[in-house]
Length: 83
Image (cartoon, rainbow, N blue to C red; front, side, top):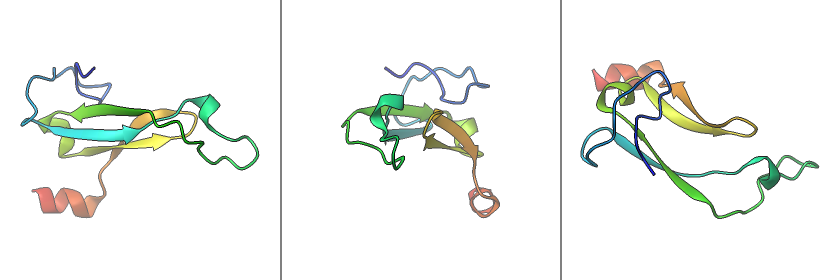
């Protein structure tokens, strides 16, 4: 369930779908990876994450094996286009 911005440093609360940016991501835990080749096994688990209006202009979300969903800075080209 969505309750706040996916940016750990932000405390903005999720209220409306038309605010911010909603992400639908396939996620896996450590048991969903084959240790031999590091490839994701199909678990079919999907979760939703949200970045508030402020954070979506500077960040996006990424899934990284062993870390889960993390925030990453947008490339500079995308930041310039958003301005």
